[in-house]
Length: 359
Image (cartoon, rainbow, N blue to C red; front, top):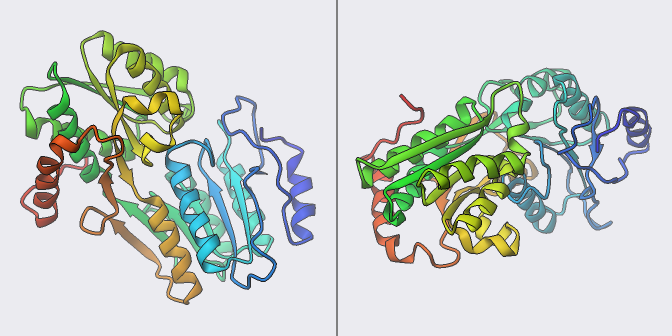
């Protein structure tokens, strides 16, 4: 839980060169004005001589089994392979202001962390502002192209291309010709997932019925951290006749998986291979996941920092760059893999152009 008193404590700790780890739970409904280290915050081995890396998570933080965990996997790989001297991980809270995000980034920069990675488009304004205050610090932001400065790297993904593949998988596996999409928050980024999913499903069956539900509207971003809302939305889709539901809802996705299990239906995960990361009792209902390789982008950025090769501006991780894909864990799409790979190659070659927004 983020707490108001943390500001003073964190500033004091940073003055001593390191923020001490403490428990954090970004799903709290309590008002927050400052950041708190997650319990995952840690230091590398004493002999490490690499950079001090700061990472600011989106709502849900490490342990969300999806978007943030993918970023965490890239950071963990960098810890083991790049000899990072120190790592500090901070987490966003529900309902916090942009000022709180700015403070989180500023605490890291003031503490000597360089580079700093912000996970999620919600950090766009704060990254742009704080980056101008610390021109010698390298920043990276995932999922945002609007924050532009000489010291900002924008790590972007072709979510619509990966979603096309799982949309095709949903239509191929649906026995009722009826599928669903649950989005966490109705913002342009999540609309890319919906657009790709719908295009993929319709490429297989032009008359497929597609249910769509967004859990919240901005500025309410709790749709990314409310499994109960995810479960209710998916229950409605299964009750209406859908038998496969794709979720792009962050931490709310667990509720979609619960609804799929109860309905004896199937679900599609997102960002991470959720057939591996979801609760064990729910993994069997996840037929595939749309892999958004934030881990690859985070590791690539950190590796480029260690070799003085960081580039500002946008890097796009698409199907051609192996930045998005679909998972095969559990073997549930093995029988349609050849067809899915045909679609993949057509997208890579340009034969198929996937829409990145709904009409």
